[in-house]
Amino acid sequence: MSLDWSNPVAIWWDFLVAISALNIALLLVLRSAYRRNPFGAPGNPSSVIEPLLLLAAIYVSVCAFRSVLPRADVQRICLFDTWLSSVLIGRSVATIAELFFAAQWAIVLRELARVARSDTAKNISTAILPLIGVAECFSWYAVISTNFLGNVLENSLWAVVFFLIGIALIRLLFSFRGIAQFTIAAAAGGVTAYVIFMASVDVPMYFGRWQAELAGGRQFFGLFSGLHDVATRWVVTRDVAQWRDEIPWMSLYFSVAVWTSLLLGSFPLVRHLLARYRVRRPLLKASPRPAAIRLPSS
Image 1 (tube, rainbow, N blue to C red):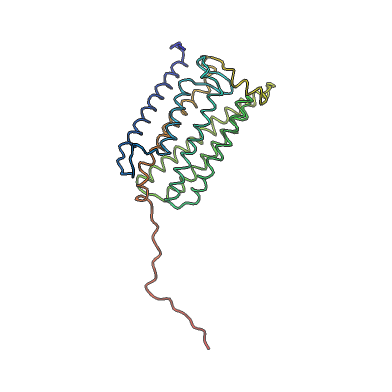
Image 2 (cartoon, rainbow, N blue to C red):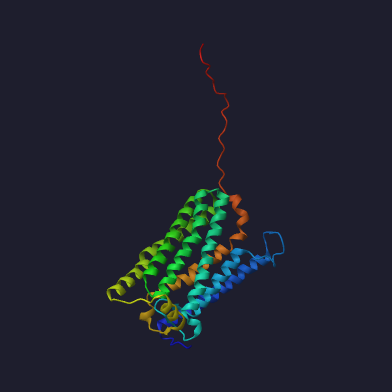
């Protein structure tokens, strides 16, 4: 499993491993914050399992696994010749992790919507998981068939979901003040950057691959032949040309996306402060003078 450290791919892998170690350390720090229970949550803090923390822990762990053993699913390429590099295993755990990541966004957005009394944000939070579920189906279609059209549709849906999340955050922005408003604005900025990246880099990359394979007359796998191929074939390569297009999105995925999951996982630690920063609309004051009532003339 050794790598030639003069190879740029080896340097990139070293970066992924270091980032994964950092992410695991941050997860342990977050877990320690829950155990200290500084905000007086009821019950024994050592026995409480906070759903958002659990979802973050699974996401961080899966991303660490995928960082140590990176693979490009449709191309069937990987860095190390081990059964753990099987695309079937990698895609299966990735599906679970991505659904859990989407669930984190849905939970946090729904809670913000409840405090702000925003039907727009609430409705968007309800739509997140179903849309990401459809995106995962497109991902599996791409992996099984090796048809990049599935990736085009999958990543387009991710972009749509985060576009909707951005709309919800902008709506919520005016319902809070102070540090809560600043945090929501920062989240909206990050979401905007993600949507721009997906629309300008990620989706066009997969679209170009799909068009190139159509032009080349590529034959795609059917269901059963594709499933067999997914489970049994992985090609070890350290050629930087094979990994060049994967490096940008994987680097961002296993760093920024994981940090986002950790931040979402820390939300319950500050949830009790939301009401303090909610903007309360002034009530309409009653007129000090009684309104005149005209009586019909006889």
